[in-house]
Length: 209
Image 1: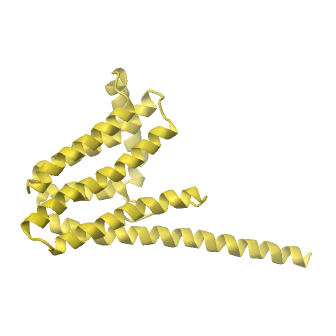
Image 2: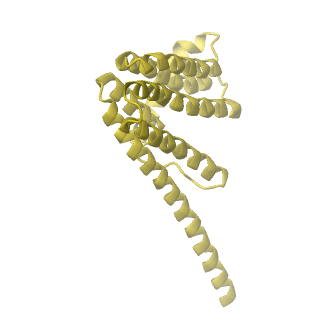
Image 3: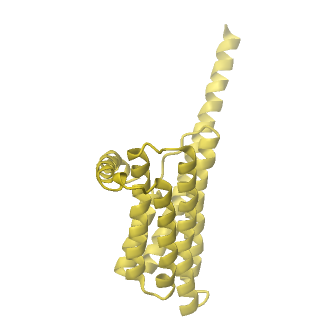
């Protein structure tokens, strides 16, 4: 939500940067997407061992690749539906992989701690936020709303890892990601309700003719 106002400027800046650099190489957007996932996998070892700062740097680098893949696809005129599908699919893997690293650490440090429940709630909220939008748009509804979308979630994760405030970060993710999922559900429900009311109004008008 917070990054939408800067989305146009960010896309313009990254597009120009990528066109001048990566756009002149043989690298493809899909390769960048896969590299982002591989880097996230690497971060698991550091997160599981409690080296959150290093893990945060790796996650930040992985998220940078995830931002640049779309810009590279546009720069090389390689935008495709499958590329978008691949990016979204691997993003879900990346999200859960980060939480896996944290889960391994906290379960080793203090089994069945509150952090374990927060990680579970964060995973549920993150996946539902993405799923509700995908399902809603598949049903023809608009669903580009929400307090904590993926860019904000990643920024919050990186900030928490770099500062060491991991438990606070998990509390924020657990609450705000589920609030976002509920926001999207209600938003879609309101659209459906308005459609039903509009259809009823049309039928009443037709009967009155």
